[in-house]
Length: 374
Ligand SMILES: C[S@@+](CC[C@H](N)C(=O)[O-])C[C@H]1O[C@@H](n2cnc3c(N)ncnc32)[C@H](O)[C@@H]1O
Image (cartoon, rainbow, N blue to C red; front, side, top):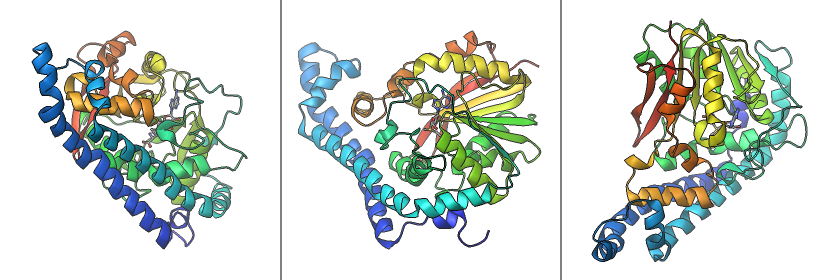
């Protein structure tokens, strides 16, 4: 790589890096240490009076929420989570606004004679409520662009990704821009389906595409595609891949209606797409994935492991708070979905359907999908 590559250009300066480190520590403290204190506090102080009154523990988040809402430790936790999220956008936004013009100029230069491709669809109807939701409270959301070259939405998402994951304990510990999560998912695919030799791979909801590269690394003979609703994200992914000299094919489309022919892919993956898309459209995405798979093809998705039956009451309540207050409006819809039933309804057959958990860092990922019959 030459000097001033896209990766070189994304460098927080001294003061920005100091602020971002502080935000990382604050987020980690609020999301992990303080949340752990809150869980212990619930067991010691909040649950016993409820049990004394009702002769049983609260059954679910709805029943427990009012116990928490009046509690000052819970209020402190919520304030810290909210404030640290705001500080994350402010501090990373500062870097992105400073480097934005040079980054966009470099992106334009490296995509002049591309190896891969980029297909945008300016007429695409972005579905509601996804289009108007600022996920994670990202200012302007994932889809905002003021000009054709505008990469700010993707740049700020990219800059916060590792801070965000690390604070939740769900990190592959890769430096910013390295495809740590993609490599992790590819390793799970290889371990679970050792006979799979994909000719074409699709990363659904690929975001800014920096992890899509991992599938090309893991399966060098395959043609790798990334698809996302967001134009700034796929434009970013295209430039990032071209800078690295990797042939990837990006498309702006809705995962419900991708436009690829039947049986086009041998492997379809996604990372944290489904808890960020409206749960009503999940069944349609499963149908589309089944249609796109060649015989013997694999559909495997990694997402948040927040199914209520495996969460303690405090975790159910804090997650619910994130849904209501911290830009995660689709979390509970996804967590409450009967994923295996929808996979079966989409055409995957019993025995080929997957829905289980894999460890990563301090947490777990929910892996689900299916293999199409040979
Ligand atoms: C949390 S991001 C994940 C991005 C990327 N996979 C990553 O790991 O960073 C979720 C992505 O899903 C995309 N998305 C949500 N609904 C979609 C849909 N119906 N079709 C295509 N992309 C969608 C969003 O635009 C966003 O980029």
